Image (cartoon, rainbow, N blue to C red):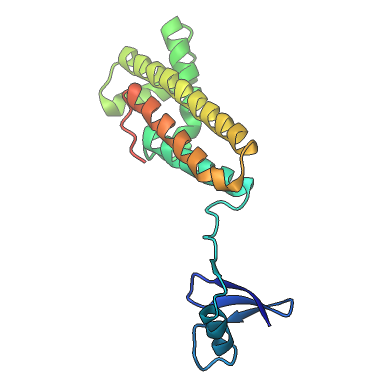
Length: 186
């Protein structure tokens, strides 16, 4: 005897018959199909299978947020070789020492190599490096703050609430970027 019928999203049915779950395809040649149709015709309620969760676990939601944050940061930093990104801290220190009048020979070599190709003066290059570094620190701090704030919200939520939390976090990050004059569009 059929105890429960659930309409699957693929058009078939998940049916409980005598305490056992059975998949019945939406196919009249299936031997259980007629039983399902008779039960429905007799007034048995057909439940709809719930849509799968976008993020079944908190880890899935956090992974999605991290991937989004990486794409967000990439728009801000632009596509740069990893070796160049790894040099940013050294370039910042070299620029600071240059402006302080304490640059080493290595500092001057690095700064002159770039300035020689771009045509900038060392003063302009050092100022540009320091301005970019200051802005980057603010951006990285904000990304970390948004990520931690979102993680805390996810920890207090259910999987059904995860998409709304991620959508709100992304909207807040985009609004913050726009307020800073950053052209980010994710």
